Amino acid sequence: MPAHPEKRLRVLIAKIGLDGHDRGVKVVARALRDAGIEVIYLGVHNTPEEIVNSAVQEDVDAIGLSIHSAAHMTLFKDLFALLKKQKAGSIKVFGGGIVPQEDIRALKKIGVKEVFTPGASLDEIVRFVKSLDEGRKEQ
Image (cartoon, rainbow, N blue to C red):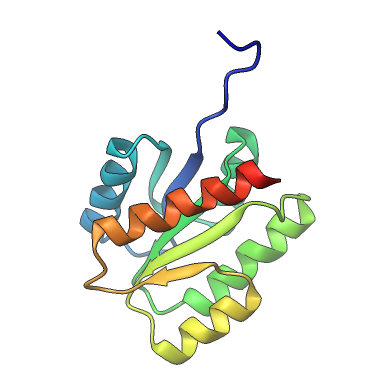
């Protein structure tokens, strides 16, 4: 057995803001877990501060946020500012929800790695998250 077993990919999944619609995010969390990814699920009604503090405390590799409240631009910007403040800018961020294409382009410019809209398959989401692990291993 190796002295330092390889750390599994750890992903924090949460609902950000006041939106309480959580069926989809629970399905995604379970699919990631079933694919061998360690998932920390925070549930609904999280602030950017709660998410960043939990992500740092849990030493996650990525944060996946579900949002349906139309406040995605503000909330993601706040999240990135807090990640920078906590010196946790290496944590990858992705999201899912009802987000207009022009906002997806803007979110990617501020650092969001991917945004999954309704109709995205669980396989697509799992493949994307696993690709984050490949990038982590190369570092």
